[in-house]
Amino acid sequence: MKPIIILSTYPNKKSILKISNELVKSKIVACVNITKISSIYSWQGKIENSSEYLALFKTTYKNKKILKEKIKSTHPYDVPEIAELDITSINKSYLDWISESTN
Figure 1 (cartoon, rainbow, N blue to C red):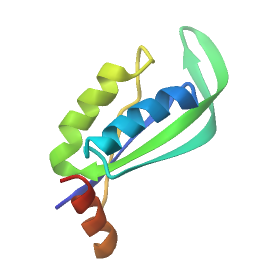
Figure 2: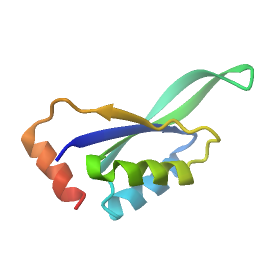
Figure 3: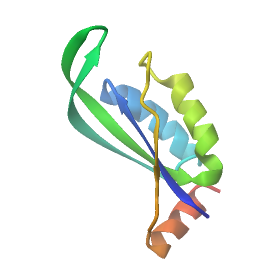
Figure 4: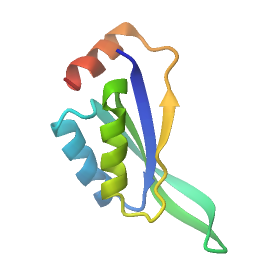
């Protein structure tokens, strides 16, 4: 089973908590790590400096398509970040836990 991490940023904690709980409950993801970050970016011709929440969605390769679709359909941003991180190394016990948690 191949592990995958999908990352995305959200404007507030409420928006990420709602989708994260749904995804874990439905076993699409094993875990979501959430942390508050500062982001500087260009949007509609302006430089923005704002607080956001970074979410790391931990799942398996077989769930990545449904996860990406769920993020896209529920995301509050017009242009959500949905980035896939390939995992080249992971300890077996953690991989086993991800696999068991997403079945």
